[in-house]
Image 1 (spheres, rainbow, N blue to C red):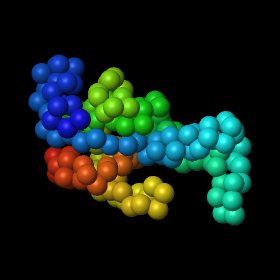
Image 2 (cartoon, rainbow, N blue to C red; image 1 turned 90 degrees about the horizontal axis):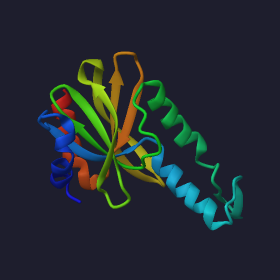
Image 3 (spheres, rainbow, N blue to C red; image 1 turned 60 degrees about the vertical axis):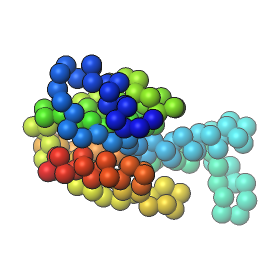
Image 4 (cartoon, rainbow, N blue to C red; image 1 turned 45 degrees about the horizontal axis):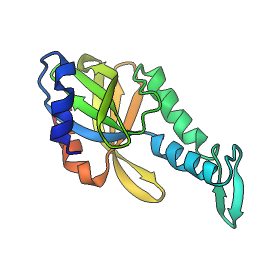
Length: 167
């Protein structure tokens, strides 16, 4: 689903606030959790790492430090998106609003919001998923907490627009 269509679907929930920028994003650590839980299920629901070949390890707990760390950082910062694997990150004049996306990319629930007055900085970093580099929007709050959201290369222009709007 295109970003413009997603924005149309969530506009009624914004209370009349205009959308300045939006992008589809992945909460830091969420994709590791998806991939590794699927891998764990594929090897019989393994809950501990299982060696399948030299250098290859599968299991639901292998990616736990990455996904748990990302979730803990967001929770501590007051930006808990729960178990959402994908979000629509929306910037309005007053807030940054995060909507969980369904498996088909359709906005479901407003899961978190950040008052823009709490934002100390926003910058573009980089993360890696299975060896592939991915741009990452990093938000630093006035409390010093940092929350990050990966942006697929196909949505890079939208991510750049979000950062330009927040700067």
